[in-house]
Length: 282
Image 1 (tube, rainbow, N blue to C red):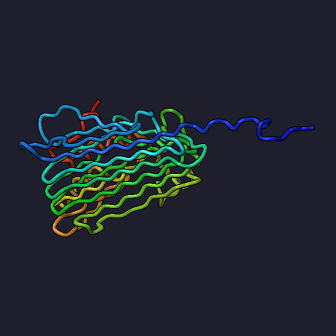
Image 2: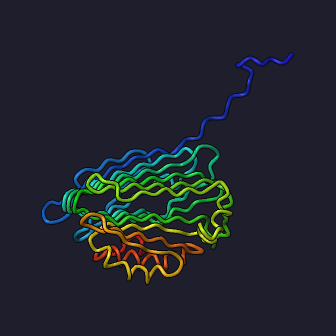
C-alpha cells in the first residue's frame, strides 16, 4: 500500500528568493548649487553620488543583485526641486536573465520643479534569451522644467555569441508637463523576438536600439545636428510643446559597440555643458 498522506509526500522545493528594491532621491538648489536633501534606500536598490564641482548633481543607481529575472522588482524615484539640476545614470549595464516564471519589472518616477532639469541616462539594458521584462518611465515636469530621457536596449551581445530568440519585452513611457500629457509610447515585442526584430518595419535585423527624448526650448535648434549624428539607421523629429519643444530620436545598430559610436556624441550634443556622466567614460 502506498501512503499518500501529506506527511509522506516529498517536500516542495523552497521558493527562490526574489530581488526587491526601492530607492528615492530628493535634491534641491541651496547655496548656489544643487544638493542632496533626502535619500532613502531599501533592498537591492542603492544610490551613490560621485563628487562633482558644480551642477548638475550626479547620482548613480546600483542594483546590488547583479541582474534581474522573473519576479524581481526595482523602483526608483527622483525628485529635482525648483531651479535644481540632476544627472542620473547606472553603475553598469542592467542584465535581464532567462525567466523561469513571472517577469522582471523596473519602475522609474521622475519629478522636476519649475526651472529644474533632469538627465535620465542609464547605461544599456541587456536582455537575454527567454527573458521576460517590463520597464516603466513616468515623468512629471513643472512649467519651465527640462528633461533629457534615454533608454537603450541590447537583445543579446553579438561579441559573446548570444542570440535572443524568444522572450517578452515591454517599454512604457509617460511624460507630462504642467499636468498635460506630452509624450506617451508603448513598445512591446515577443514571444518570437528574433523574428520580429528581423522585420524591416521593426528593426531590420538590428539587435541594439535606443530611444532618446529631449524636452527643452533648445529642441528645434538641435534637430539638424542630431539628425547628422543619427544617420540612416534611425531618425529624429521635433515638435512644439507649449512654450517649449520636444525632440525625439531613435537609433538602431547591429550591436552595442556600433550603437554607442553614435549614442555618445548624440548625448553630448543634447545634454549641453553637462556632457556625459562620468561612468560612461570609464
